[in-house]
Length: 235
Image (cartoon, rainbow, N blue to C red; front, top):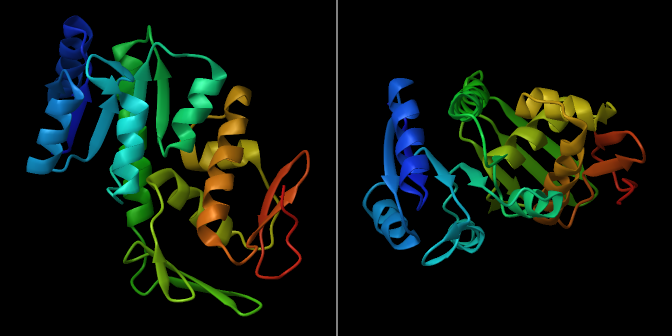
């Protein structure tokens, strides 16, 4: 049973989300503050965090940034009243796997949770020995699908769940031009136009982690191409 922490200081919203998740077969636990969340994570790492942003003892964005900085790769869905595009982009820049704005339907949230776990499980079901090895000049990138490990020149890099899905999808389609909308459809289960900037944000983060090689080429106005060569154009 998947363990989910619901971090929300509004009692009715928190209890409602927990109840819907429990009905859907998840082990959901409600937490009202970042202090409670920090203690809970130290005791047991969850499979997913549903994170409010404006909490009485701190900023949810900053707390998730702290977690990612400690290489705690826990999938995160932000659940917040901050619905501006800039806030949504910031959430994804911090490593969120999804972002839902209040007010929302608990049913929609559960559907997004189910879709997230389905994507994660599908990326875990790979053939034994599935290792992709790429060269970019003197740089080597190795993606081990069975071990869920990425190395650049022998050094392991930590990706968020969303970044891993995007990178492996591009790598499995090496040399092919892939549109932003197709990345959304294949890696996120939705294809709203307003979310295409989210793809750009994830690509930016992935590129920073894949340096020094230039592995992802931008095709302006369309999308991206994974390529093992030195002339990949950056945006």
